[in-house]
Amino acid sequence: MSISRIQPLAIIENRLIRLGLAGLFLFETVKAILLPPYSIKPLIKQIAFIGARSMLVIVVAGLFVGMVIALQFYDTLLRFGSISLLGSAVGLSLIRELGPVITALMVIGRAGSAMCAEIGIMRVDNQIDALECMAIDPYRYLFSPRILAGIICVPILTAIFILVGIFGGYFVGVILFGVSPGSFFQGMSDTILNRDILMCFSKSFVFGLLIVWIACDKGFNLHLDKRGAYGSEGVSRITTESVVLSSMAILFSDYLLSSLIL
Image (cartoon, rainbow, N blue to C red):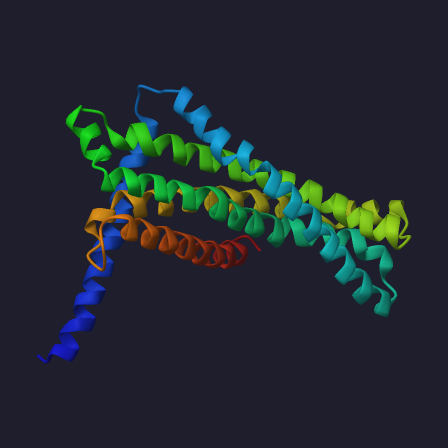
């Protein structure tokens, strides 16, 4: 067999091994979540890090996204004489797609990258090895609080993003362009179904899990990555890879969940 054939096979084999290790990482973390003893203090700390400290960026992003959506839909609906549908257009856009996806991308940039870099630095400095030498389970101590905080905080942040986005759409549509407040909210009430809300929070739950899983796994398994330097350069590389991979996973799972729930 030629070298040109061996190299692609080796790459595929390494990717499959890496995927299996990521699956084992998730299994061990979920097992640490389900089995006692339980600790609340690390969970509260991670909720504050992922949730409370992301509030500002979520509010700002939600406000301007809602304003832009209302501005674009107002121009489109005005051409067809359907201004009364502005509220339903803004609400459905935020609840079904833009709210969960943009919230997840904001959390990736603010919290996911920081978690990956933090765990990567702990791996480089042998802090994780030190925890294992002291009989401290790193899955229980480091990762299970982060996973739980991610699946708790991302849906809450998504709800805040949607509410602020609806306010931004109301400001542009009703206050700036003079759309009737009654028709704005009535159209939203008539068109948004329980299925849409279920889709929104199902996506948020999955997105929260994916963000923390990918970020922590990349940092934890830094020492298994043979493609480059192991020190600070390796941390910067896996942090970048974590952000890119998380973003791609969010967009792929968004399509998959939309096709399943529709």
